[in-house]
Length: 249
Image (cartoon, rainbow, N blue to C red; front, side):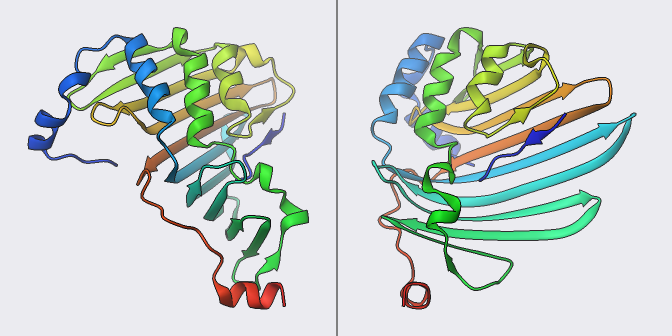
């Protein structure tokens, strides 16, 4: 069994919570979903903080543990601009940390790893796979599985959850999170999903998804977390001139 990993808090003061949640209290699940989808159209850019942990267990003992974290800025458009930095570390066995950073602006894509020189990575990476877990994609996926979800109203947000073996839940996140399990029945994959929608903005603020699969030989558990912040606050993403002068001279 193999797993292909992906390529790639809001804190409101109590006084603001009391005044801001107003018209978005006591909504039904369908009403929250409608507002979440409608608000998606107003999202032009944002920051995303992804983290991922993959654990491989063989005969009851952890054989491999890998962690990835990072941050990215993303501008939504037909040909998105983005800047991201990721850190990947194998904890078991300990093989050190890998740092990867890239800029994608227009038709230019540059990248570097572990302090090496910046390079033209357009042909190497392909811009369509740099960040698949975008805000708009995830909201669409969430809408497609809404009937599977439970909702609970909290003071300043709505919490949605699912825990079980629904193949529809796994299929919804398989592509955005770039997950591939082989050698197992995907209908038996255990999914654990939790995400929150802020009452004031009716926007997705964070999403946690865990998938576990096993066969007779091993068990693989993937835990992913995405935090969205600074909506519509990114004015521009550009590749620093000192980088373009070296790469495209």
